[in-house]
View (cartoon, one colour):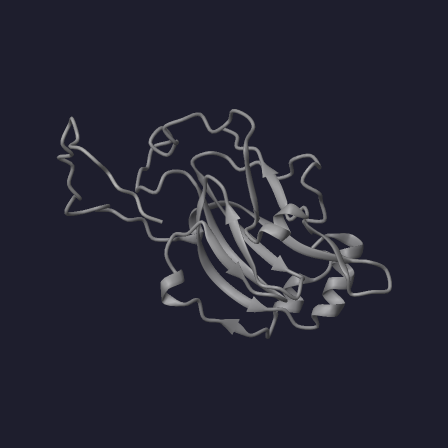
Length: 209
């Protein structure tokens, strides 16, 4: 594709790239998290076959009531549990996040069966299934603040999700976005594979103050 611009601009562009883009770039620190959540990826198949029918986050469809209500100006730790056999690029709207750790689950079939019955990571012993699991090194190019990250199958990915501007602001007022994030229709998080998000691997969020 080629764009041909004809004629001279009425107002010349005098903008320049600043010498310093962000002088105080905040480093990810899990200690700042106000709360922690489990976000679980499920794949459902037709009975007696391996044919997938739909994919859910936290065993809920997109139209189910909101269950994630992050507070503006805070950060949260999300433990993303991928119980599928696929790598899913997780995308969170509004927020940025940093990957803290990725670790494989042990006896994943046992854990998956329990989760499909109970949808409760604690009750199904997620820590026990992570104990001794292989740690996966996060590539250097993936260690900064992001809004998409590939979540490994049969593993738990811990991310620090930042629901505030990417600055070192300390006061509550400075930690707010320059627009009202509490108004509708709200925001979502989802798998960024089109076929997956079209088949319900997407959930709404409601930001509160």
